[in-house]
Picture 1 (tube, rainbow, N blue to C red):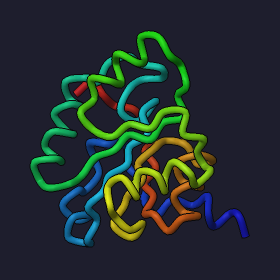
Picture 2: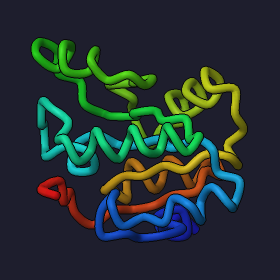
Picture 3: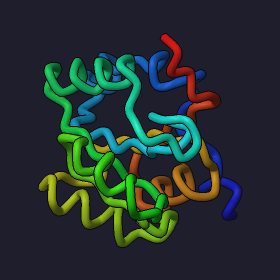
Length: 145
């Protein structure tokens, strides 16, 4: 039974290969991104210009963006995360539902309008699927675009 929650709704090579227009046409308005190995390399401390440009273009299309990360380091992370102009939940405790619900409440959106995009089955995919959030698992962190 739990195996069905580990199966993402979609798989993509990276955040750059997702068909965001199709998601918009399907009524998705909230994009929740994992950070490590999704928008940054593992424990990266800066968004690449390509990742910044992607998030800016998605915002221009009307999507509301949020970052949902299990990263719990302080120090330089605090400065890096403070510069991200979207709601950020770090130390989220994924796959537990608390942080997902907190972001949905903050964005005033139902789970049916949300998409979780991340690299891990046991945190990103499982957490999203259990709550009825559309899940997309990315295979790589191709940020050298």
